[in-house]
Length: 240
Length: 293
Image (cartoon, rainbow over all chains, first blue to last red):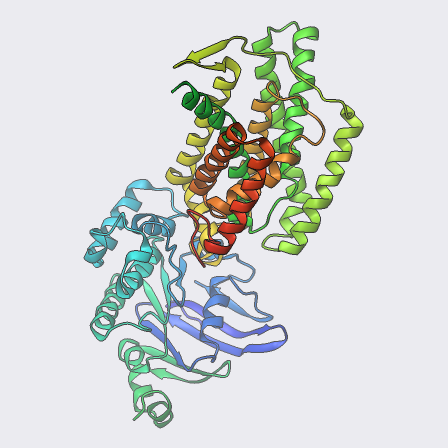
């Protein structure tokens, strides 16, 4: 399953909370140059999977390989160093800090000032709305701007893989479109994207490869198009 | 005018020590989400070390008084930082974000350290000779040179801390961890190391307060403990975990104490402080500059 083009592979991952299994034998892989998505309902284990990949949760069994290297036992900081960043569910901005400082927290692991400054400009290029609000506290931003800031913060780490947990939840349709465009731009710029969404329409449209999770297991996988035509997916997640 | 300046001078004198003490307590709370009940022990350790190093440096080493004090200050801060690192690695690192565990640990530590200080130094108040003799007169109000120096040094330390928190990479991490530890970890911030740094800075601030106060007030093995209750009041009023809140709260309590103490009497001022805390907890529990969660 692992090949030269595999960025990240997850093999037989099991995670439980206080003895209650949250992930059971989950395997998936993220290939170079494509957007990968995981769809599933609330409580299916999507967030748990992302936290386990990010190093926030320690799996009971199973392996995560990043560029073919076992990343078991790595701390979240080490995963960020290795190029994996997570934009968590609910954005989790530092709301009392300025927009500028929030972006700078994303670059915490980096030391190269000129490269950080260049990426700062690139991020503001993606999200021009943030440029006028750099000194405002993050809490003063609209929901859409906050999501942009959360994505921008992740990009400031100069990641190789960005994991986005429910980036469009609670946003107005026009803002959702903006976020989707940004996700595509990120992907085109050579950063791999793992997108977790409840909104299967968006996710399947964007993704080259998609997985469906139910009760902590992967129950289906295929290309975005294949899954869009799948009866189970159409009924359960697309409401068709 | 003269009265106003005198009261202002008193407020700054008392307030600057309160601010240093409360800043450390609030910083430790911010990054570790615990309250260090043994914080006064850091202050006491520093003050006691100053009382023993100054006579040693002047009598045995033959240094001038100011140099002896400087040496004592460096020694006191260094010892307190070592003590801080020791108690962090033996205890506090295991009770991060654990209010019950940290309560038991820090109260126990306080008793152990107070006992140790009593055993080493005895219970009698110890003092240091005046480092900066003389008084200074500003608008008719008199202030000892020593107390003026204390205010200036405390203001410099506070300003330095503020720059550290607002302008440096470590400061960014301290603020981020205080606000959302998990989100900070997702940015690659090593939470445990940041917590250690926060704890050490807090201990260092208490040591600074102890060093500055040693020549002004007599030192006993429990000197630092009287600041703990006041520092609590300060950070509740200023806002738990808020650096600016500790500064504002510290000065505010100093105003209450010096003005109340002058126009009424010290016990009325103390009473007023506790009433203020009750009012704050009822009306604005997040404090002046804290954020409601």
